[in-house]
Amino acid sequence: MSARPETFREAISEKFSRARRTERDIVALGIAFAAMILFVGTGGSVLPQLIGAWRGLTSQPDILLTNALILNVALIVLGSSRYKALQKELLIRRISEEEALKLADIDPLTNCYNRRSMGPALEDQLTEARASGRAIAVIQVDLDNFKQVNDLHGHSVGDRVLQVTADRMADVLPADALLARLGGDEFACSVFFHPSDSAGVERLTQRLIDQVAEPIAIGDVAVEITMSVGIAGSDTVDRECSGNATPPQMMHKADIAMYQAKKDGKNRFFWFEPSMEYELRFRNELESGIRRGIANGEFVPYYEQQVDLDSGALAGFEMLARWHSPDLGTVNPDIFIPIAEEIGVIAELSEGLIAQAMEDAKAWHPSLTLSVNISPVQLRDPWFSQKLLKMLVQRNFPPSRLEIEITESCLHNDIGMVRTMITSLRNQGVKVSLDDFGTGYSSLAQLRSLPFDRLKIDRSFIRELRQAGAGSQLVDAIVSMGDGLKMPITAEGIESDEILKVLQRMGRIKGQGYHYGRPEPAERVRERLAQVSLLAENFVASEDEASEQRAAHGA
Image 1 (cartoon, rainbow, N blue to C red):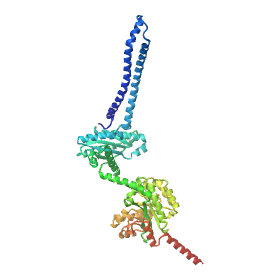
Image 2: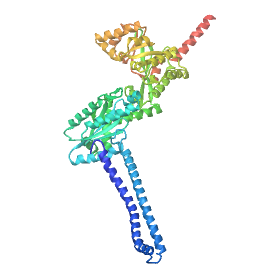
Image 3: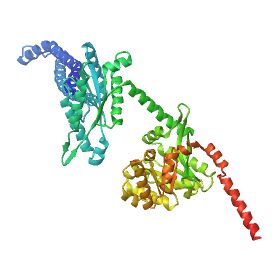
Image 4: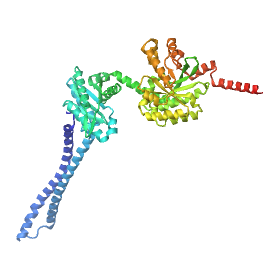
């Protein structure tokens, strides 16, 4: 058995076609044989009569037998013609059957096995390995960022890259290995190995990675491609399955390991481990739970206080998402936000939370602001600013009380579109903050060109204020830069009096953190505000009282 399936497939095709050809040849030969027997039988009686009558030795031959002989000759001629036509038809059909068999079992682009034929071939390999005391390593391959090759250079270049990749892998693999293209940019290999020599499989896999990574010259284009690889050994999978693993099980485990390689940075390989499957199963449960949670209203806004550090007065709240999962309890956003971004539901999730937060904030004193975090994925939507402004109108929420926070990573997607969105929102009164400042790659030029209203110093810098030195100097420098750019500063992660006092000495800053309390749901916030008369109803009452006093004074 070889990495590519030509010889193996040709043998099966020839055997199949030979059986069909033999069956039909027997029918045609039977017709011809019967015609010849009839010719001999009738010719033996009629021909002597014809010869005798021609020489005048006998009377006129039997008319019926003579006609039978003529018809028999015609039948032989017709049968011969039909036999030749049948042979031609069989040839055409055999070619068609061989082509159909090839299309069914062989990838036409790379001439490797395909997903359909890889299973039976791998089953034969597994049987042979177990009989000889060896094991099989299934190597699952996915080309990294292959979509970009098609997008940048076209599908013809992408097809050529797949062909060259298959050729390079076939050159590295042993003669008794299998190579299949499973579809798109996914390949699978299987090789024999001794269970005590897994290092040999690792060396082979690294050679595959290195060989495929060599630049591919296609016309004037040089394409560089890397691949993520997952490996599953039949010895490990057999133990996990408590018996002989099947080809689908082997390929599934290798696929899990391949996705682990993708997750850990690509261009590398991982052996399958049972913990990977548990993690993947948990991830799938999270994805399903997030989708159900959005539909069932399980995601709710929590609010963290934002305080003016000079006066100690409450300035507003930052809305933070929490997931009240019936299965997992209260889940923090660090867990579900990245997954929601990956599965494409972050916009729906975020918009629902913002809408609820606006309704909650309408019950607060009008002087209190509402800050909300915006995902980089949302900023890729060119209609995001219009959607947000529409929400403000629908909920009758003052734009001046809303502050959106975007991270530095948003600035690397499409700086022009981000600038347009920020400008559009600020023109309507919405304020825009640059969140987690210092953790990304924002340049001073970007800060000058983009119309931000505020900088938020990341909590990792604020924590370092516990120790005098470089950490304090860095925060002081950011505060000074904010003053120079006319951008107010918010400090995240204030957790102690010690940090608070250091920040108070640096200038006018707004702060938030556990020093002022943990994030709370809307009901608790309302109770807190009621205690200090900072609800909207208190503002209305004070306004009514002031109006009455002005009216009385005028009278």
